Length: 441
Ligand SMILES: C[S@@+](CC[C@H](N)C(=O)[O-])C[C@H]1O[C@@H](n2cnc3c(N)ncnc32)[C@H](O)[C@@H]1O
Ligand code: SF4
Image (cartoon, rainbow, N blue to C red):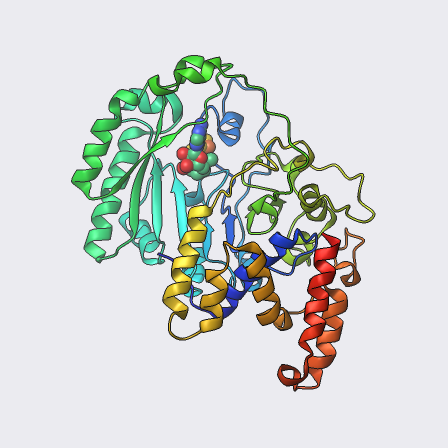
């Protein structure tokens, strides 16, 4: 269950929805979910993981080829949380490495927890952990620890988790469950099991073991490179071999947007920001936070603006020719909302926080599925409360004047300054403004 209760986080969520519906190129909302990777270093050699494949002794991909191998510093994390923490509902503390290799992780989680942010890690758990380290992790306030253990015997486990130690990982999850019970915590501990042909016969045994331990068992669908490993498809997925590997052509007439450019973000240990969590190669990154550059600057730089323009069909001024990885993404218009379950949790939480106390918020959330009604209601009730404009990026050519609502905002600011805006602001200006938007679309 989400924990956020500050109104500004929910307002930011609504603003994000509004901007996404408008297909705005420059946004004022911050993401409400972030994958913040504490470590891009890992000691294992999982074959389909780009980090793992760099570790293969027989592989000629040099270390650090795809991404700089490092851990996030406290200074960078603090700066990120100072800027984004107010708005984030959830942080996934993992992406392309082993999160427990960052010794500051309990501190990161503790800080996030103090801001009511739900936190989760995925870990191979194949490392030596003292009871004290386990206690520190659990007492940080972490909400979910999911261990990636793909098998129930050492032989099958090591087929994918190359370099891992099954007995160590299994022993660690058992100890974690025991320490959690002793501390009386309600942290979710899960055993994540990627299913392949070579381990599917062990799924039931792993599941039973989890029931005995009182932890969650998750059977997960593995990405399998069928070109090189067709035999690894489990029995219920053999039909995939007959399917064409070629993606469907993108339907350019669709005006759907990708959530990664409005609602979610991925930040790597060195501060680089990726367009989405699926891109492991740093050459596709959209900029970097740190060394004087804020997240807002990256979030509204020319790369993000261009990526947003691909969905909106609105040409991003001055950067029409810019090519990013999103230009070639086959799912850029058909990607379902990855975090729909996350949004339901925000809706549920909004009901808990605002029911009976804040009818404006309750109504706004209730209208989210009716785009046109939501936009009208949002304009009437929230647009006047915008924060300061986003800072222009050093990389970008846009100014605040490019923002579609800049003119309205200037007017509102002057009314705001009169301190009697609630009484004096003429509603007909808003409705004229809405007409203007409708005419432009
Ligand atoms: C790259 S890992 C990083 C976190 C940690 N090192 C781990 O393995 O759990 C992030 C997630 O990707 C999953 N993963 C690795 N290989 C996968 C595959 N072939 N298909 C689907 N998920 C995979 C891991 O199990 C984990 O849940
Ligand atoms: S343990 Fe995780 S990060 Fe490490 S190689 Fe395997 S999937 Fe990749």
